[in-house]
Image (cartoon, rainbow, N blue to C red; front, side, top):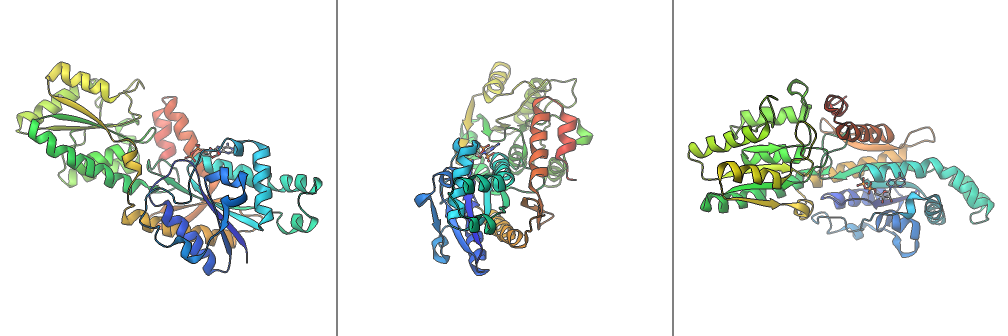
Length: 393
Ligand code: ADP
């Protein structure tokens, strides 16, 4: 059978284990030899005990675990050609020519470079007599399939990344806990959630917890709001959740004024507490950061409310994966193996994604490039461009 290896790389997220499990079981079911590569690209470069054959039972009892049981790492060696040559040798030695990479856009970029360099690297290994003529002929092409594990939901081409839904569950639990203590002392809480370039966690977290105010990294003019955020706003209205405020709209009124009037209005209506959610990458209209500290200063100086900050941090990335992320991981993992089995020399490196609740394959690099272009546009304060790029094609 064909040799397939699976690795997880970059930041971990809930649901990665479900994906790993599906790759192993669907691979074995289809008659492949499936291998784990432990500790991400570092294990690929180092080889040895880091690359082990997986069995049906070796992925029992992992679907409910957060993180990734095969380990993840950032790896400097793999960003160099000698590191990738070493990785290629380790794969050829084991007859592996199919690689599943579960990670973010950095990890998927690395996978694509590896695939492009593969024939040249094999020629080099042959010249150095580290592989045989036969191996060069038999293993001359590397198939790659990626899937995106990220809690931020910040990847272009998929409706949901693996881990986002579980992170939202964690955020909801935290806000619910904070609300009960905030109520007792009539406090205002500022909760910082993850999301450097993407306000998805903040805005959906805000919507589902009746937060009073949400700060996000995006700052688009209203009519061009990205589709998914727009839907969240419509959902907020439909579900009678507290209005999710869009900072700095209209632009003539600055966010401190809007924030203070909203908080005051809520207190005057009898509410004993206020919840403000801020994404770690939140910005104001000029592109300057809006930190939890800055918000606290505004609330304390103007309203003299007892105000506390809670940074949720890695709590969002840990713990048990939700049902949605378990199913998503299973579906993506199965589709990735199918994509590899059907791959030819002509097919591109794929990333599997979710589109309208269908598992689909998309050319990996096109999605990575679009995702990087969004991040760059945001950094350059080109909101319109970022929104346009991120919208579903
Ligand atoms: P993420 O996959 O979550 O975006 P990183 O950007 O840190 O995380 O990438 C994870 C790993 O992927 C890096 O430590 C490195 O080993 C590999 N990688 C990232 N970019 C490249 C690249 N351009 N070339 C080769 N390897 C890369």
